[in-house]
Length: 346
Image (cartoon, rainbow, N blue to C red; front, side, top):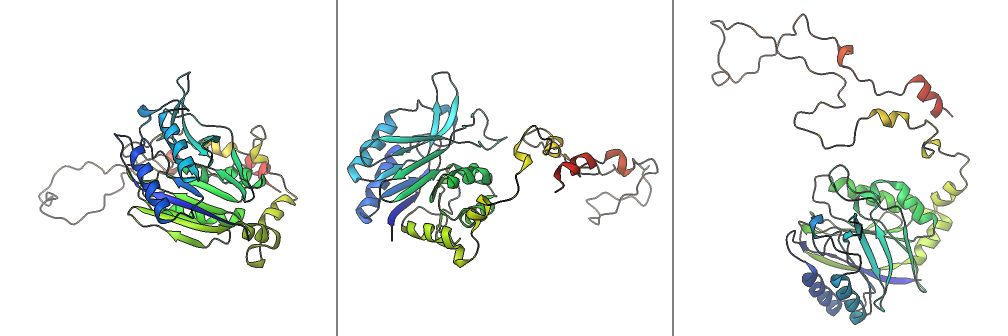
């Protein structure tokens, strides 16, 4: 058995003031209650909230305070992430990994900012993999990164056994994200530690999932701190023998007979994707992507039988005008063309 105790902290995050003091107070409480904890993970952007106007240099006073706290409690500490401003003025969403000696041993810049909503933030291109001596290999991804399985594929192909996943999700797709987190654990045979915030930091529902896709812990919508002792030998056993003695997905991927031309940007295999329009925030009443625009109702002269809508709530179907455009006039067929289909054929 290779035990290791990781705690997530789901806490209320303010958008307009620092949360650093609150994070350190909660860390003190966590370690007083559960002194056997060995690693602590906070949610995405928990130190200063979701506004990039509070961006700081990579090395800053808050990081120094977190380094001191890691030494004080003898823990690995990942204080969520914060907006990093480079000397050139570029902004990244960056997470730091601090070891029990207070050293920042790794940093990670979010690879997939939440486009098109997360504006003014550049995408990172490097992966974050680090080892906890005598325990195992850990990897970092931030929030939207997990929607792109290629990110976890790269990490687990490098031997990552625990995926640390700080999140700031305050939107209605949180349930979908939880399903993705669970699927990620099964697909890549790893632990997933998914920590969301509250208030300006999200809607909560943090979770811990084991490599058999079993939910070990599920937070609700209130503050929570949840230490879980994991057994990393379970990851190694499952990767050798399969989930519940069944699917050996990492080895099957390793031994695959197929390559995937979609990852070659010059292959033409992704031509369809370039027909989906620009990556932009939808506007009110947008009909983008619909195959047919609804025709407008005909204009008729008023008659004695006409009543105001307020007098008669019944909806009367509009009559299609004789000069209405045909379906083909407005259709945008997004099916692959014959040429595109030929690139996808086995």
